[in-house]
Image (tube, rainbow, N blue to C red; front, top):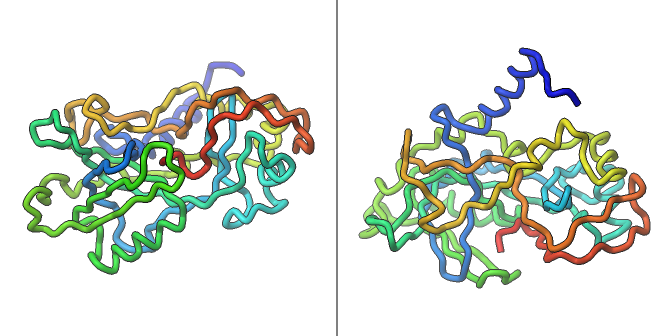
Length: 292
């Protein structure tokens, strides 16, 4: 494919890039608490259940990287209407996961940092991916606190790194809390203006693009640009955050689909929907949102 492009092409890509960032250039990262007992303080950019963001996604191996691609079946019902569902059904232990329903939570978060003068990192905008069932927890918090944008919440991880039974608690903090003051995280959600979750946390692919992947092991070249950009989940350590520049947020991370590196590359599929492909070397796979 030629590297040349015209003005119309440039306008399209510029609009896509702007949709992922705020007017001040702040990009949205990924939320992560790494170990048992780790905490973070946050404002959640949700005022009602109507604002909840959901998607059904498959986790797949593309060029040695685990990425998420939206399911073509309504509500991720794992039927014949999605070629990725069919591929998983034909080889459940292969490199394409069963469809999973996810919730994406927009937040501005500050992590505990003993080396900071305040004890916490500068606030930064992130997306927190959780199973869709976690929406009940947030619905309850909305009933208790009303608009979650107006309160601080304390998020605590319950479970050691790698524990598949890890849970998270979300506690609404009182405005008069002796440590966590409202001014700790300003009510600034500009990073989520014109935000598109499908350009941040997973890919939306056409049937033709999915069939090409199932045949070749790669998506068509025009959609492969972002797979060359390494994006790590935002770490909750002091070194993961730079000093604020043009806003209250820290230096951003690139907003491209999240992945984790597998232990072994995927073997190239031989048919559009592999019926009896050999099971590849088993990497450490976690299809629950990579939050454990």
